[in-house]
Each structure stands twice: as C-alpha cells, then as structure tokens.
Image (cartoon, one colour):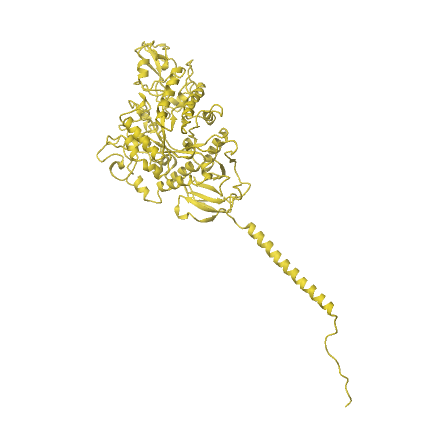
Length: 628
C-alpha cells in the first residue's frame, strides 16, 4: 500500500497581537450594550420614581395665597392672637349658691374645663351692677359687681385663679348707654341745669298732638321697638335710648363723658383684666341735627322687628365714632406697657365699614373688630364659606389680624342654624382658619336651642315683640350649661328652678358624658384645639383656599419654618361625595378627622371620599424651606 501523505488539521495560524485586539473590541461592545441597558433602566426607574405619587406639597397651587409678612408684620405674637376666646354668659354657666342663676364663684369652680379644652382666654358678658332689664347690658355702676353674680371679692378671687392657670380674662364694656338707675343719669334728669345734664342725649318735643301729648323729635325707632325717644315729665324733654327705655344713651360729644368711659377701662385694667369686648359700638354717635331716617323698602311687617323698617344711616356708624375708638385704644396701649392688653369691637355692618375699626398703623383702633360674617351667612356651602373668608382676608389692612365667630348670645346655636350633622365641621372651620376664633359656651358639646314659652321668656327683645317672640327672642341660645346627667345638668342643685329651662337632652349631651367618649363633639373640639397649638403653620395666619364647590371647602395652612403643611377639607353638602384634591399633593397622611377610625392613614388625594359634615385634616410634607 502506497504511503499516504500526513495531513495537518487545526486552526490557521493567527497573529497573537491581532487576537488580543479582537477580544478587547468584543468586550468593549459587550460593556457598551450593558451600559445602555443599565442606563435605560436607570432612566426608566428615575422617571417612574419622579412620577410616582408622593406626599409632598406641589408648586403652582390653586387659589389665592395670604401670607403674614415676616418683614412688615410683628412676628412676636400676643395671647389674643394665639388663644381661643371662649364666651361665657354668666347667668348660664354655673350656679354656686342655688338661686338658679350662674355667678362668678361658679365660673371659678369650672376653670379646669378651659384647661381641658385648651382655651386660653375667657370673655364674660356683663357682670356689672345692673337692674337687669337687659340682663347686664343696662349698667347702673360700671365699677362694681352685681350681687346676682357675687361681689368684688368674688371677682378678685376669680381673676387670681385665672391668672394662676394662665387663662386671660376679657370683660364686656357697654359704652353706648347706661341704666336709668345709674347715678349719672339720676343727676342728668334731675334738672336742665344739672352739671351732668348733657352727659345724655336730651331734645325738645317737636310739638304736641291733638291730645296735647308731646311729639318725639323725629321718627327714630328703638332696636327693641317703639320710639327711640322717651318723654321725661321732670324736665319736659325727651331723652334718647337706642335700646330699652331704661337704657338712656350717653352723649360722647361731651369730653367729660369720654374721659369717664376711659376711667372705667382704667379701673378694671388696673386690677389686672386682660382686655375688653366693646359692645354696640356703631350706635355710640347720632346725627346731632336729628333728621328723620328713611323707610327700608325691604321691610316685612309681621316678620321683621319694627327696627328693621328704617335705614339707620343717622343713628349708626356716625363718623366721630372712630375718633372715640382711638381714645379708648390709647388706654389699652398705656396699660400694655406692663402686659399685653386687648380690645375687640362689636358691630354688625357691611365688611367695608367693619374694616375701618382696625384703624391704621399710625392711629390704631381695635386689635380687631369681631367678624360675624360666617355667623350671619344665610347658607353654608363650600362656595359661600370660601367667598366669605376670602372677602375678609383680602379686605383686611396690611398686618391686620383675622378672627372668626360662629356663635354668640344673640344668635341661635350652631345645631339649629347649620344642622346637627354639620356642627363638627363648623367648629373645625372656626378653629382652623387663620387667626383668632371665638367659641360660645356649650358649642363644644353641641348644645342646641331650647324651646321656651312666652310665659317663661326673659329676653326683653322677645317680651317687647310678643307676636314674633319665637323669632326674635334670644333666650333659646342662653340656657344653662350642661355639665353632667344629674338634675339640672349640674348647673344648679336638684330642686332649684334655673332662670331658664334646661335642655331636655342634657342627660346625653353634657361635658361628663362627652369627656369619656372619643367620638363625641367635645373630644373632637379638644383635638382641634390641641392641633391649632402644635406648629407655626397654625399659629401664623398664612392661608390658601385650594378647592371650593357647593359641597367641599378645602384650605391650606402653612408656614415657612415648618416641614409640613396642613390641608383642611370639610363636606358642607348633603350627600356623600368624591373629589380630586391632588392639585395639592398626591398623597397625604390623615392627621385628624371627625371620624377617628381613619386617622393616621396615608391616602391618595385624587379620590377623596367624604360624607355630609365630615372633616379631614391632612398632613403634607413641605419641600425645602417650607416653600410652596
């Protein structure tokens, strides 16, 4: 067999350096592909994270923003800016001596209630010496306590006890008129030549009628009905009384009267009182020419009280009033050198007129005038409440301090005006809006009006208008405070007849019951008052309404020093609703709610579900230095 040549099988011979270069390029391509894949993944992840729902306050928020300027406005807040003001009607708070009428000792016995609900200031309706024709608003001695309420020792004890507990005391000053039993008026009416004659408003008859009776100087009508003029046989002149016949109007065109009123303020401020609510300020001056007032075309006879039949442009808001307000303010500023004092004015007027009561930086008047616009708002919807708040905030002077009132001794209870299921919402809006809220006694436990017969009616407004007493009487909202389920609700001892009837629901609606119930009105009120003290977002009046329709009112509270903002949402409508509030934040934590079961949850704001009257307060992270 012939030899077969040997054949060599294998790789072609390759240059070593070329192979190394080829492998390097291959690895590079792999690395590039991997980098592209990883980079794309990171971009996708970043985009996903950026677009993921977050608990963070968004930019370009809806609504108008109001900020308390850190450069122009005093950041050193005083007690009247940070406290809840709690109004007590002294006759109805606590009876300590079983005469059926509340008194100063009774109030002192109940001071722990204010600490429990975190109230820092208490305003007492008049407790000065008085014949009680208008339950203390007819003062016969401005510098003494009426025996019904106790004596000056009782007052001093109450004031000392409040100071010990760091609760501020605000009294009620009634400057427009005194009682006809006041020493000043007794002198004034004694003769035309008495030195105090022109301390009050006197005028000659316009003439006599066919029966020889004196005719009043003009057609002015008293707030409580009938002529504003009362003829006095002693001197054959009429005196003016904008309210009851027994409440003659003081004459503030007399400098002696002005100084006497300032001395009254000094007397109580010297004792250590922290402030005053000044009553019925718009009535203090009248047109000295005494022209007739024109009829009001909107008057409804048999429905409206007679006072509403005229337009009162000659007897209210007369210009010298603001000069007088400044004279009073000077007294408060004088005593504020030792500790901060406070003055608030009471007037029901259009908002542009009310704003004048702030005064100016150079000539201040009241620290703020009471804001009654939420109180008197005919219908509460998200839109109407939002518009009312926006109007006040936008019309306030620079660095003016806002305030809110939702109940008082002259208006029906929240339960009766707004409806049972909305009481928590009303209290929440009152306490959480920017500025100072005022709470009328009993609203924290959801007290309601009590039906009172004409025979049991005490209010002179009702007694002077018996045909419409159920409409105009203020007794239903002045009934005794409900403390527990014992006889007379703990207001008076068993067997005592209180000055007004106790509400028939007192065994269920009372402080003791609600203190033990975490779902109660009192528990929610307490939580609200704690929340509003918790951070600068609540203390300073920065505010933005972010959503309002017929049902929902939602607003934001914030401060540049805080890491969180708060969104308050209330359903004022009559149906279960779902709303998108994600323009504020995607996610938020429920800080407080009228339904405690949902508190602490982290929830998406794109579909907020709320039942009628429900309130939810959300906590939202603020980016950076509290920017928004």
